[in-house]
Amino acid sequence: MADWRYLFLIEGCCTILFSCFAFFYLPHSAATAKFLSPGEKHLAYYRMQIDSSSVVNEKFNLRESFKIFKEWTSWLILAIEICLGVPLQSVQLFLPQIVARLGFGAVKTNLYTVAPNVSGAAMLLILAFASDCTRWRFPFVALGFLFTFLGMIVYVGIDVQTPKYIPALATTAAFGGTGFALTLLLGGFMIFDNARRNLKAGRKVMVKDIPTE
Image (cartoon, rainbow, N blue to C red):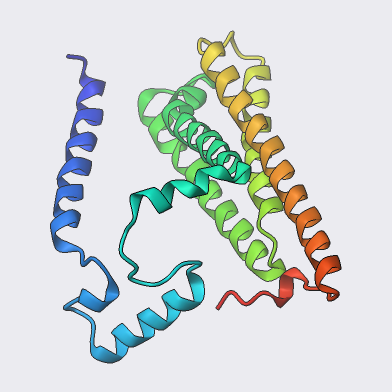
């Protein structure tokens, strides 16, 4: 087996082992958490009541859970999640090849992958804080998709040598562009639906009026 495959084997085994540990160690809910005090349990229950759209600690009903798929927006959100996963994993997998194409050796290639990851983390924080300050979500999600789409297009256009992973790059760019379009579509529908709801209710509710704390 090739050396690089051992890395994925180790990472996969660690993930499986940790999932088994989490399944048996983590509590079912805040009410059953032994490491929380009564006051902390009460606070956690209160926060979940505010944030949750369902009854807290409600017994799971499989038939009821499938009703969500009757809403077309659920399928749209699912498609956005799929489009989100592909670019994220592609960037992580192809980042060393992207840097190596610039003519660096193995050591420098690994070192130079740090800067894009740090800048990506910084951009994530900027988008998250901007989203929190403006109370808007979908424009910043769409912006993340757009950055990925443009990044892959720029990579293909680098005049160094012919990329060896054109199908993979095209697939990643396609998922990024599709996610960008779907996010804008969902956001536009929500704006339209909220405006229609405001008109029906006879009052105007803005995004900033919805509590998030």
